[in-house]
Image 1 (cartoon, rainbow, N blue to C red):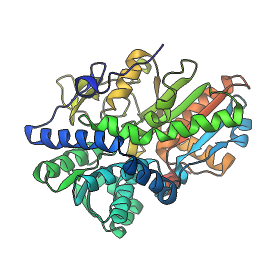
Image 2: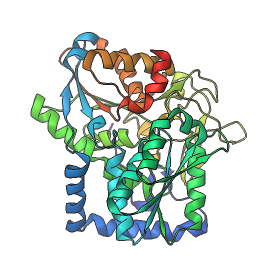
Image 3: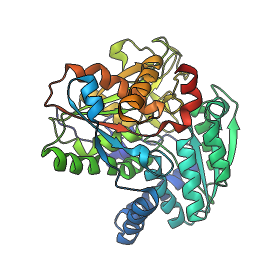
Image 4: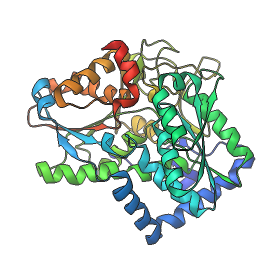
Length: 402
């Protein structure tokens, strides 16, 4: 099925999803951001500065590694790994943070605000703020702070103020709430550096555009290596930035199948998982609604209360999903499934022992789904899996299981 996204028309709609649902006080800064981004996108000087930082500071391009031992171990398709884990700060998040950091400088904002779950976006934001001479405040749920203590220490060493959020589920949703409250209060001096393809327009578009370099590189690299496009793409989906970053360059290629992997947590009941688009597999609670500025699929109770979520991976532990992913799922252009906590742990161990790569627990969810499917694929089929981050931050969690 072909895919078309009416992204800019009607204030950033992806079919019925997306839009801009915010208090009146945020309309002006969102319109300013949209205008400044349009100017920057057409500015060769801005693009050259971003390209230089991506290459010389972040470490792009990242390799597309043929996973020979994993391919042999699973016994099916030829598997390639897009190594976003090799970027400075350890994940794909730096791509977007560099872009938005330059936008903040362009707007004359001296301070950036961020939310973080796994801490990788917070670390990348703090890193970029230090590099560009900005002050930085990061909001993080206290439960996430406990399981991601290494990243909390990294952010503080980089000069960021890390504020724990003890409300609600004490995870990413609550961190976003507090970050948005800060932004409402300080819109003239601060830029909200949102970390995923979430929130009100233009954020889903901007974050996607800064992450699409993943797929653009992978497309060129696989054609160089195999002289053709891949048959399958795999990526984990929390908010969905690494997945849309990989998928975007292939959206027009109907022969390329795309699989987004959500957090199945510890069960299919509401509150036990973070699977928004995998309802066909029996995960309950997701339906369209508005959360934190955008209309998308949201885990919620029968009376519309936002549900608590669970995942062993802090970066996938969120009640909503990016609106473009909701549209991709509705159109049938991408398939969305979910992996349980114990499967993700086992997959992290498998990748570590076959390829010498310890993935982030987020990425391990995609590895687990690949492990289910690859043995059933033909040996001449080609898979690209996005290793969105490395597992240093998850060693305390992994050590309890392995």
